[in-house]
Amino acid sequence: MTMTMTAERTAALELFHATSSAVGVQASGAPATPGAGGKRGTQPTRLRSADNTTPADPPVIPMTLVQGSDGLYDWRFGDPATREGTLRGYRDGDVFSEQEVANKALDVVSGSMVSTFLAQRDRGFNPRYGLFDAAGQRVDRIVDSGRVLLIVHGTFSKCGAILDQFDRHDLSLGRSPGSYFAELSQGYDQVLLFEHPTLQVAPWINALDLSRAFADKDLQLDVVCHSRGGLVTRWWLEVLSRPLLERARVVFVGAPLMGTGLASPYRLRTAMKLFTNYAIALQHAAGMAALAVPVFSFAEVLAGVVGSATSVLSKAPIADSLIAAIPGLASMSRYGEDGGQFIAGNVELAKLEYGWSATPAGYFVVQSNFEPQAVGWRFWRAFRQPVLRVADASTDAIFSGANDLVVDTASMTTLTQKLKLTGPGRVLDFGASETVHHVNYFEQPETLDFIARTLAR
Image (cartoon, rainbow, N blue to C red; front, side, top):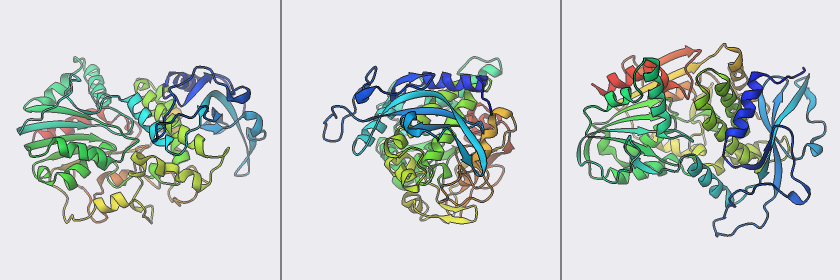
C-alpha cells in the first residue's frame, strides 16, 4: 500500500509538533536520530532522582511515530538502522508495512526517575493543585454548611476542559460562554473545582486531600466527576468521608467505577497506541481539535515509559506490566467480570467494593458505547473484540465489549460484583452511539440536561 500525505497525516504531524510533554527534545517531520555519543539539540529540564542527583548524560533513543498499512499509528523505539526489516514484513500471514511520520529523541527514564518524570508531566499539563473557584482563584476556606457544587476532572486533564465543553455547548446555541455553568451554579453557597495530579498518585491519594479539606463540614454536596475523577470521588465519600455521602448527589460521567481494560497490566503498549490514534482522529474531526492535544500528550507520556524500558518492538507481557510504575493508571486496572472472565489483581478496587448492600441513593451515571462508522474513526475496531483473553499480548484488543474508547461501558455502572446502578432516572445511556465518546460527553445537550435535572432534585 502506497501512503500519501493525507489530511489525517497532516493532523498527526500537527499534534506531534504541538504537544509539549518534553519526552523528546529533537523533533522533525522525518526520521532524525541522535548523533554520535548521544548528543542532542535543545536540552530539557534534567530529571532529578529521589536522592536529588542528576545523571550527567542519560541514555537516549529515537522515538518514531509510524503509520502502518492498516492505517493505524504507533510508536517505535531505537535507531532505524538497527531496525532493518521491521518496516516491512508479515502480520497474520499478510504483507504489512509501515511508514515513518516523525521522530523525537527520548531521554530514557528508569528507576526512581520514573516518579519524577510522571510528576513533571502532571505539573506540565496542569500546574494547579487544590481547590479553586470558577474564576481560577485558589480557595483556602470551604463554607461550614449549606450547598456546595464540586467538579472533579479525569486522567491527564483539568476542570477547565469540562468548562470548555460547557462553553462550546453555549456557543452552539448562540449563548454567551459560561451561561450553562452560571445557571448550574445558581443556588449553591460555593462552587469548587478540584485540580489534582493523575499520573504520579492513585485516586485514593487525591481523595485524601478532599477528605482533609472537607473535614467537619455539614454540607449538602453535589459532585460532577469525569473518568478517573469518579474513583477519586468514590474513595473520598465511601471510605474517607462517609457522613458526607448521606446527603450527596454524584453524577459519574464515563467513570471506570470498576476499572478499565485500558489500564490492564498487559495493555500499556496497546493503550499508548489507542490514545495516539484517538488523538489523531480528534485533531482531524471537525470541531474536536481542542480535545486532541491532551489525549496525544498522554500517549506521549505512555510512550516515554514504554520506550524507556522495552526492547525494540517487544510485546512481552513483562514490558506491559510497567503499568505498575504509573500509580494513577494501575489503580484503574479492570476488576471483576469482563467478557466471561473474572479479572483479579486490582487490590484497591477489591477493597472499594466491600460493605455495600445497596447502591447509594445519590449516585447517577452517564455512559456511552462508542461505535462510529465514519472513516476517520474506524481504528477503534482494532482495539475491541467480542471475546478477549486479557493476557493475550499478541492482539491489539483492549475491550471485550461495549466501551466509550477509554472505559468499558459495563464498568460505568458497576459498584460491586453484585451491585449495579440501573434505571432511566439514574442512568443516562447513549447506547450504541456514533458521536458520543470519552472526551466529549459534556458537549452533549442530553448530558447537560441530565446533570441539571439531577442536581435540581
